[in-house]
Length: 386
Image 1: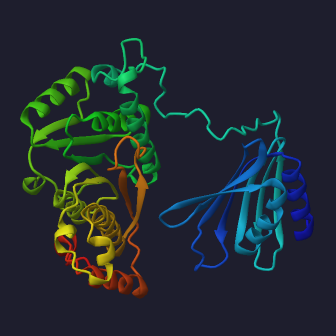
Image 2: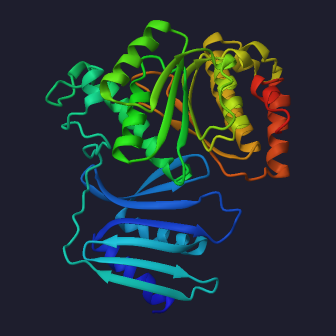
Image 3: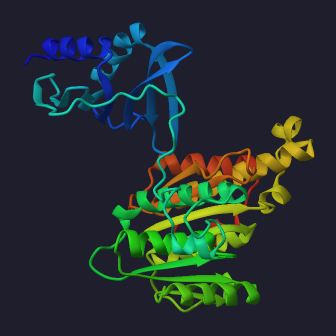
């Protein structure tokens, strides 16, 4: 098949509303900021659109294009990417393009036509089903005995599932040939700690050992009783502080949720020093930078206390992600739960890749620190790695 024949075939199928989903990947240029593009059809205001999801290094962006305007957009994708995986109603297509647009084409007809879902608000498919009883959710009071999610606990159920999605995404970075060591700093009532254990140990069958650490003795005692009742023999809860925990030399995953101010940085620094492959952190109460900020060029913004507080929080988490990137992690800032539930909804997700930072990346980081007059606690903790 020639390049022009390929384009004509794909365009015809898409214009005939046969698209189910597609992924466009393998950028032709390393400098391309967009790493992957996903396509799906949807109906908006009674008009057929193609939704385009642009996946950058650390963020996602979406654009909805009317069907008749989409072919021009698709043309630009061929110029920038070399691989296409696309599902039509009755056909699955894989395409690889050479530098000179020679087409390697593979097509399989589907035995059963696929269904197209044009709904913009699809029913959420949770990794933990909202109609299945889970012993840990029943024990924690999220579900009734017959597996129904309690009305007043549905936001917590959604939060748990969102967290499980992050855990599921991280599976590829966890070791398969030995026990996986996981620490949860500031585990609190441990809804998410129990969810993590259930998903990795029971759903996925991984050999894991999990420790939840918190300062509240009563909470730790209650969580320990629940773990024992559930038979979670590789899940333990200990009373302790992040600063004083020195029982490990290597850890595979570190989780820290709502650790206040520099306690988050302490946990991130420990994770890096232990060589953690996966870090999941939801920060809280970012005061350190707020106290340091001296940036006359931004005084129009920062003279307002509310704006200063929010700016400092966003800048703090951006700096944390950038420091992790500089020490060998692929770091992203992602939405944890809906903003309507809590403004503290940013999750730092970091996977260890060992990738060395570029000179330009380091220069941008230094310039940002100079602009804000910032001396981050995390940077000081990791100065030997930077």
